[in-house]
Length: 386
Ligand SMILES: *Cc1c(COP(=O)(O)O)cnc(C)c1O
Image (cartoon, rainbow, N blue to C red; front, side, top):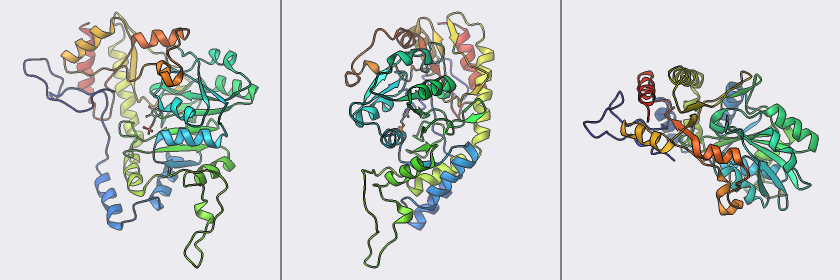
């Protein structure tokens, strides 16, 4: 992970506009958040309550998410999706290694095995053409990670899943606000998992959401995010205990009202923030058109990225990172292919595009505090070469 703390530059060095080191990420806190969170603290109703409901209602109405259940992290969303999908010991889930370990660790947590498919070198997303021959009688699901916010080839993935009776789970940690063939991410697959962690572009500090398209499964998500108790239908009896019968394992995965208050504040103007992100990305693209040694990721016109990251491929990457750093600009791979971890079985040399991606991918600053002048500066720095 990149250093997200802005640092003053040493004097005598060329400095970005503002004179501060340009970090890869910033954490966005809407100005109204102070007041909104303070109000929750004043009520002393801190845990899951009406603000969580209001947050979920706005995720649905403003971002097009279907049955969103607000949770305490994106990792909880992935774990609960796998649980509700009925995936367990002996099962296999196919995913791409280009992601954060949360995607695969939750598969291990439910007792299943992550099976890695290769990526498209041009996007970092799973290559649908590399999925089918990895399907065995143990395969239960495909997990599609939208790298950097750019949606995977969902139609192709869904077609494979339908052919083989598999569940599709989207790790959409990077992609609230993205669309695929006109549909919002969060409305397409069986399950979609979002993260509202601090450096993600819609944050509740820590938090997440799980969307289950099927209403029955969605009810199960809401029940099992809180121990497996159906909160809405378990009235208090006269002696002061909720009436319920626990039938399966649940978790303590719900979001809190004070976190929801931050999320509600950060939803204000979300579309405008996304429009600014798109403008910064367009500026980067225009300014980095013909840079020797730099190859852009590709984008299809049928989908809109959430632009959590701005990445591309570079030759001589270490020199690139050092050149940017010396001029006050952060750059980072963010994550290498996670398959190298011992827990996941160790590095797979046969995933040749992932291995190439590991060697050449790089990301430069893209966040809500980034100004157009700063983007121009980064463009200049890169055009000077490395
Ligand atoms: C951030 C992230 C997660 C986990 O989200 P948390 O909210 O931190 O638990 C999962 N998958 C990917 C790809 C992520 O980047």
